[in-house]
Image (tube, rainbow, N blue to C red; front, side, top):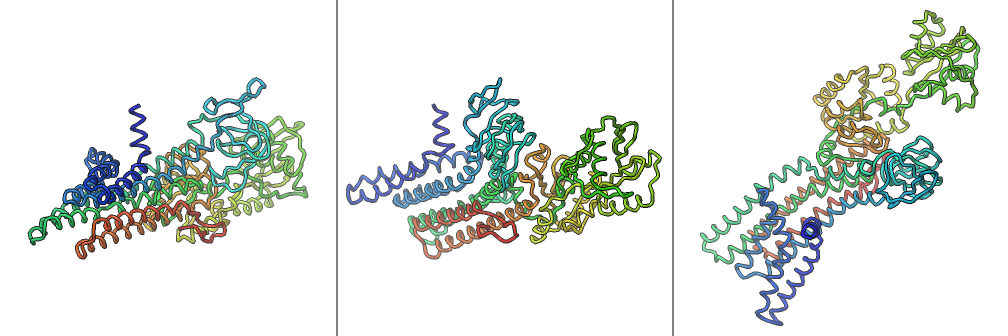
Length: 640
């Protein structure tokens, strides 16, 4: 029972707004009792102080236990001081407005957390499990890895898994930002909480509930929101010194006023007013209000920032280094062209190669077979094959040998290349493609394969350039291939044939010569470079644990344009922070000047102080409505 009360009252702060309302009632009652029941107002002031100061005392006590002073102490001292000199109604007004401001801040910042936690509501309460050929309805908590689940059209998928039967589409927009439904068929992954489309699916569960993509997103963002940015850490350190300075300033004001012969009550009142107007509430909330909102806005769009430090670092980035394979390209080999020799037809050359490659699981072999099937070609499956790793494969049909492979295969087999074939090879390699020769005693032709460039890559590079970002390719691939991809997407600076340690050296060199570097990679093999860069950005739908651990930002949707979007959001967050800090500082200076120059009353000082704090919070919350760049590159009306 005691634990429930502690969580309900202190952690969840469920009584904060009721206490604010009761404080207002007590304040009105105290003022009214002066005319209705003189002498009874003391009870109302006690109630207003107890209710209005409850959470301030709790927060201040927790800060003191950590050896810190905070703004709660300044407010409480000012309210108590007002009561001591006979201005209890002004102290009660201060506590009402301060508690109201804190309650509104709690609600406002809770919006950013609720925006993430609402993702968990995507999880359906029950699932249909298929066991022994029969369907049973089970709670979501009872799902186990390996279970087969039936998902009907229009239902949310209850677990991460792989489709084993059926075909449909899935709306993954709330998790990855993917705007179009994603086709799903046997072998395709599906994610918990996404919406099934028109067809029924049978899926096999591959991850426990605690390790689904949805759960990992929520965990990552909650961790990010708990992490303090460098700006926030600096302000927190400043707050301690500043609080002591305000206390010393109030004491000095009281002493100097007494020395100048001013009445004690008047001097004390001014000192209490100074405690209020100089309090750094708005300064302290400036950074978290903006960063928590930006993290929540990013998560809704498939941009996971690992805290405010990642936002700060990304906002300063001047260079983006892109890996080639799996980042600029899809890491999926496809047939680009079929060249023929000796009068053969391209389809005949492709069918012959597919017959030899049909039983191979190599990516290039799969690309050839898929292309042949896509063209509707029929070909026999040659079962007797001799694979030569890294070179190619030799098939045997009716004691007749068929070679399909790289030029090195033929060099090792002692088969000379005619001048026509050599010229064709040079042309293909200059284009950055991989050649596969087809030979069965006669030169049949050449198949060009290449890793397909992402269709949005050129637009993504241009979007980065519009932000003033230098774009560089760092890859371990062959220079000809690297330059061909770079030319296709518009990258001017290319570093190829780099070993992992050479990638790290290039990143450090770019940082020294140009400025902070963001490295974008697909996760596993780019982990060292991701860690070495000022900001590591991992692409992919949570596919690599190494990427998650190493990178500072994770792009759930495999869309390179999200890199520019993440940088734009980080810059918008930092602009919001600096505007907040400038406004909060200006208000403090103005109110302090008015306190000494005009002697503004305590209630007016409270309104100015708490009003500025709420404006700072609301300005930060504008980032929740951030929509970034439109697909054509124009600025969205809701961007900040």
